[in-house]
Length: 125
Image 1 (tube, one colour):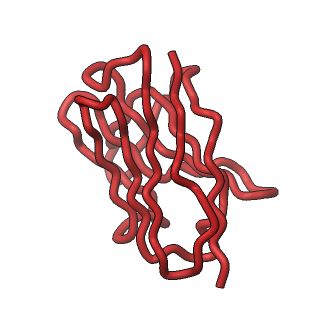
Image 2: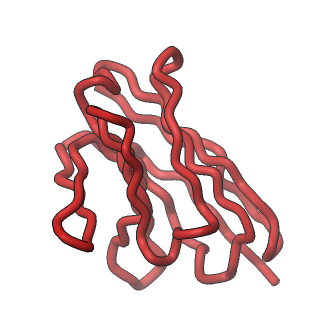
């Protein structure tokens, strides 16, 4: 099993990036995929998740309205389109396999042991 992120880079505030997570050894029909990020000196933050069963999507507060998660089953790839990037978005972004859903007004993701190596996003102003 392998998850491989790509698409990070150095961008100016207001610009966009599209991250990719290519999954091998797992089926998107059986596993939800989530994006997490970790900024220097901070804890890991859940960004977004797409469920395996119905493709339902979930977003953290920092991602709502700016980020879009999607998947291409034929390519076994999950994407994170990030628009209007801000300095606070600077972090290493990871994708992970698991399951996600909603409990009341909150979304959650139960992650497996399968994570990618991360891709770095740096936003400057």
